[in-house]
Length: 162
Image (cartoon, rainbow, N blue to C red; front, side):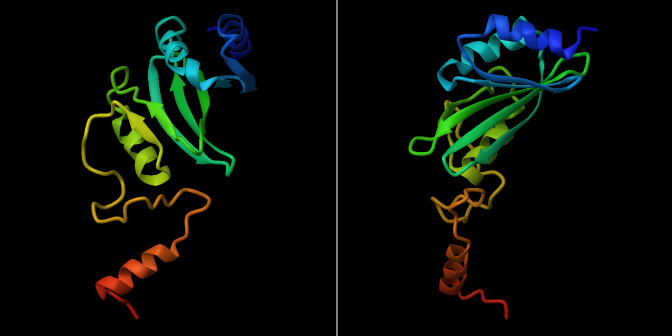
């Protein structure tokens, strides 16, 4: 089995022009940040050339300055590679990876529903995980989201629970 530090060095050599940062957190845990515009080409190579063929999940974060999307991947030996990209708050758009990992669809829908990150080329479908009647433009995992918006919606519908 190849050690995480060796994998990290290989990634650093191969993707240096696209790499923002790299960290070996501990054995079998590697974190990289890629320039967002280079994400797709690097992501495909990480799958095909470097053997990170398992998508574990996708995480979205709001840091107040930007959004971060982290793709948690694994190889057959259990090494986890966390690939982070930063997304502009004023134009939060990423491309879908469902052509590479069909199971990414639900995670990408979560990014759309909970953070308002647009996922280009994601097939049309139902909202997830929020209900269909959730107010448009309200993203509950954004740092600037105000839950009082829901109180106003409940008052209008007359569904007060006292």
